[in-house]
Length: 375
Image (tube, rainbow, N blue to C red):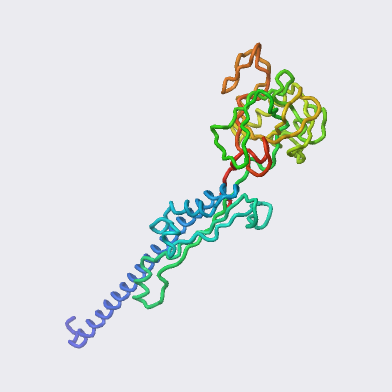
């Protein structure tokens, strides 16, 4: 401006320089803040990722060890060996090889009962569960050392990460039996009798076929599941089915060694009802049921003694509800003999039950249990 003195012009320039300097300082501070936040996000993300890896190590250790624990073996060694095959924080979780970085302790065997609080209780055998605690001791922050030195804040540059997992061996069904049919061990069926501690090998399991609860086959009978109904009607037997299959009674007394009432009969409607509930969601055509095993049906009359239980996988398409004149039936094409295939359950597959105690065909000798992560 023409009227402006030299001093006024110099003052204006100084003020502009100060504003520009302040803006640059502010931008610098924002850049440092953004960089610090970005670094923090990287470190937090890395810590979260490592935590996921450590959780996976705990999971695999528990699931690998629990079957060995139920059999009285060295479950801790199994857990450590399984963990050593998995990585966390950039290297194998090898407790023996890297004790300063990794730890698997404690490794506890105990009992798991979902009805209790807490559900897992470490203690004396027999065990059905293992709890593993995995720790990565020195998870380093990528930017922790840098900002600790720059800002002199004493930020910790590393931290431990600890995760816990519990695995349990449980039966396919919690409260057997749940279908009022009895398999007769001396009939034309193919049960695999597990020995104590024997592992489940699906290739060794039997195809239990057919289960025709009528007099002319006698490889299966209807029974009262220990409820004391000596000559049950169609409705009496239906009441013993699972609730979603039309049942209304929850039998609790059928156990190994108990005497139960067995009988025969042409209960066409029961097979129809069974097909309907197996076809329903969530089973969609295939479902497992646990039923008693007796030595010999003996004509399916009077009483017999339970020598154990077997869990069968039954497909609705393999249930016959009439006496049609066909030479074979079911997905396994069971030959029906002269005349016709009687109504009944065909091609049922034996599956594993838990190993606990007992001998012969029983709730203790169906080999390995099903392993589940529960926490």
